[in-house]
Length: 451
Image 1 (cartoon, rainbow, N blue to C red):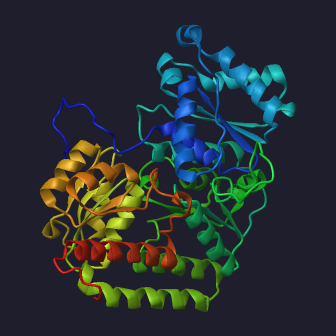
Image 2 (cartoon, rainbow, N blue to C red; image 1 turned 45 degrees about the vertical axis):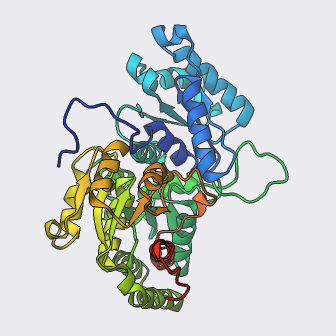
Image 3 (cartoon, rainbow, N blue to C red; image 1 turned 90 degrees about the vertical axis):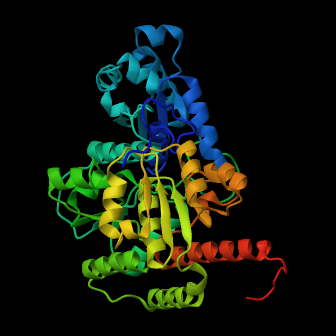
């Protein structure tokens, strides 16, 4: 559906720039550092933005365009930046992501890197992974997916076929990555999960500063993705566009299975059933108990959530999975908004939610927060679910905001947001119900203290 009539400028976009997503994906490779080909301001903005959410130190290098480079090209700047980066960090991998400036002037980064390798000697260099991420095209989630695909393209190598699994979870939290790794281990599955920034973006306390934080998917494991028996890839953004799973299927014949993020009982059941099929093992009791407790909580709180409207906004993968979960518990995802280009989100939700039109669901694609505010004001949902960027609307319209997406800049624990699996679903379910109860309690003339 159309979300605005042209010409209208974007006011507070419901998305972030593509290079930001690429930086996060590269942080999921062991021994990797990232350099942005463009102005210093891009690296500073992305570094500051991600530090505010993850509360971890983050280095992002820059080729630091001068006025001359902006006019005549940035090849010399990029080569010097790579030399400095190798000298200071000694990385195993360097991820090179472009910015608006380098893309606009037409720098051929692939050719620049070929010349660089030829001049410096390939044997002495770390692996160089190049990805095109102009901020005027796509979202941070698109940049993340593009960088993940570029890394697999650059590193995957065919050798002996192995009975292993590739899991590409998309742009989820470090907490969700840790839970997914636990699930795979409990089923006894040998796997490569990529990108894995569960430690690099949510580390423990260090005795001293580390230039490259430990953690990440090993390069050896990335090379071996070409030899896996199966790939599971989460998210609707990977269904219709380029993705690492599709690349491996087309080039190396590794079967690719796309699934929505496992939020909710049904979505998690589907993922667990696939793990059963792959491993040949039965579901460990602890997950059966988690599932049972989750369903019991659905019954306990059904009278508080049934028919209640919610506005969901953010990355289309999260919005798609969250909307289906809300429908599962009896709520109405009356507004489903994303800054991603129009097409995929509404198509998916119409296929996944029964009686979509009858439930009065409005999908806003390629939306900004001005459009979202207007829809929220008109629809009057009881709760908003998304990132902290929705706080101004929440405050203005006095609607509770559940912060469960990137970015969260006004609360602690952004890296530990859990959504995946039965445990993640339990946590977001409890948060939603308790927010509704708190709002009713605060609005009550008697201030009841017992439900």
